Image (cartoon, rainbow, N blue to C red; front, side, top):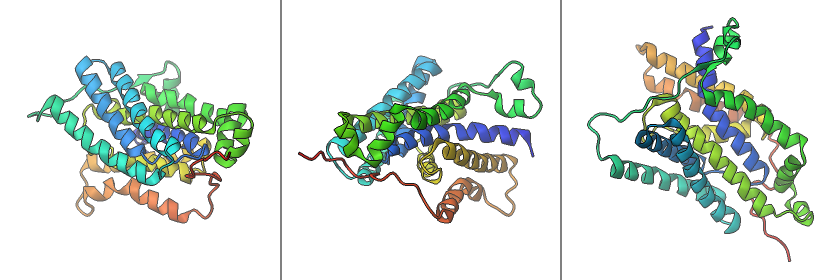
Amino acid sequence: MDINLLSRTIMMGTPLLFGAIAEVIAERTGVMVTAVEGIFLVGAWAGFVGALLSGSLTVGFLCAIIAGLVVAALYGWICIYLKQHQVVTGVAINILVMGLCAFLYRVIFGVPITPLTVEPLTTIPIPVLSQIPVIGQILFNQNILTYVIYFLAPLSYFVLFKTSMGLTIRSAGENPEAVDVAGINVLTIRFLAVLFAGIMGGIAGAFYSIGFLGMFATNMIGGRGWIAFAICFLGNWNPKGAVIGTLAFGFAEAIAIYMQSIGNNAFFPNELFIAIPYILTIMLTVSRKSFNVPGKLGIPYIKEN
């Protein structure tokens, strides 16, 4: 199998894993972050605008984090503190963000004659490790965000299942009354988890605009936030499952990009290859027989007097 294809699998899976891990943590507290698509998009928008205006990718990612936090805070406030429906609220915010990003982009830049671009993240070969045959090229010749997720994925599993903090997070989604009795504010735990999803989702969105493509378009996320959402379900709300699911979807997207790049579309249109990750989402969802759903997922917590 082509090494470049496997390397691209890891790269394209990076933002999906950022989003999926964030969704796992949030949903373990009982909150479905259905605004994930909007968080991805606002991260892509803010990251690009920040990087273009400042000339710094670091500033761009900081802007993406802040934008993701703002959208996540709005979602968390409405769903957690105002007790509104999580799916309806998420869909509304996604639509709002889509229109807002398109509007603000035009306000700031007008209608450019040529696409505005920035220089995206470059790969950073790790000395010695990148020289290992096959594995080195696949795993250790990536950009900085991929290396970051190498640490975040196992760290999230350790925190979630091996620490008292993780026990609190899981209990907030399974038995919030017990958490409340222990003197811990359930709403605060859930809100902080949603803010964490905002940070991770903002970075994930910025990956597409300034980490990979070097440009912004209002349709660039194209449902990838929902794919990250689906990976959380398919991975049974476990970071291990999220990693496996991310590799599958990253491979599907890498194949789609590869097939488009070689232009071999005599029998199959490019749109079919673009649809591969989404077809895979449907197939895997239908094939799953059981889910380890957190007991209070999607249910607002109302403290009894």
